[in-house]
Image 1 (cartoon, rainbow, N blue to C red):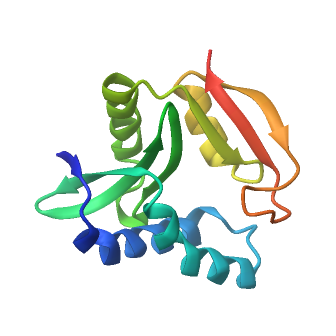
Image 2: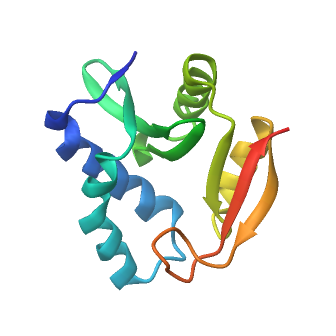
Length: 141
């Protein structure tokens, strides 16, 4: 089930975020991991958050802003079950998302978005926080 995320869900979102990042972002320096962990709740306030729930437990979530998918994280225990695909399809159908930015070093995520019809349209040398992690800008083909 997909539902709107509430502020009271933020602790679970942080568990999902940490589990996901530890399993997919092995390129992050330790100090940057903690920087993002501290700042991600601030980012929550700037996006529309939607979560995927199974048996009353959130297993993944996404953050949307206008036509852009700003974040998508799936708990490590739930990866590979199609949750990300369902969330992206929901975002496309209900909110018309057409864009996503992906860390260039996150090859799994790039492949995932390419499989869903996104293609690279640009590149930035740094991420949105000014950190030295190149970002690929992707859009629906």
